[in-house]
Length: 117
Length: 112
Image (cartoon, rainbow over all chains, first blue to last red; front, side, top):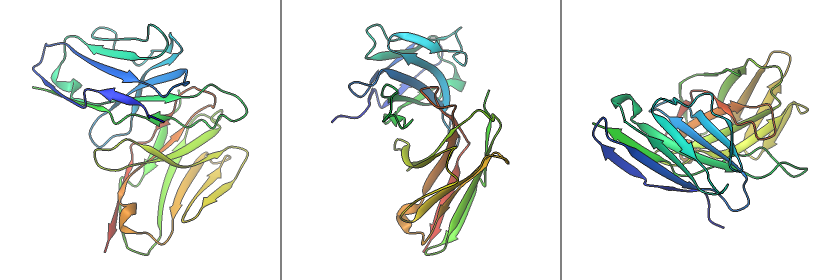
């Protein structure tokens, strides 16, 4: 079974340019997360989706960041315009529906490393 | 919201010795405490977890302990091996699909 797939793996852009990251979660996982990981730090939650609904976007800087998960499967995270401080790894993760067998484990993608020059 | 503190930030041990990483959390409602291992340039991967109704859990060379009263939990790795070198993150959540709050990570270095 394929894991969480993210693209692109690496992206280098100049400041003020837009950038978008794509995530395809594990099949059947209805919860999708976008995390930001700065160098040497732990992942920080940006947004969480339950199916197509954003149920927690309190940490998403809405002036320049946006996200969507239109059909409750794939998701896109966009930054426009990018700033130097946005250089980081953007991790997508998914988890299955709750229930007796739900463990709480998050399954992460390999991440998209953004460098803003 | 939840706040997770993790110590130390870097830990260097001799191969074969034990390593202990400690975390504290702030939200008494948190009930799920996983540990993730992240190798350089790779994705974080779950290595062990514990729920608040359990005080200790062990899986071969790794174990996790939880003290709910003190709101702290620890990762113990025995007989460390070179492949244990990585960054380890603790995390906490209120369960369900709330999402995890991570500590800042511990860079574990195994000296040959």
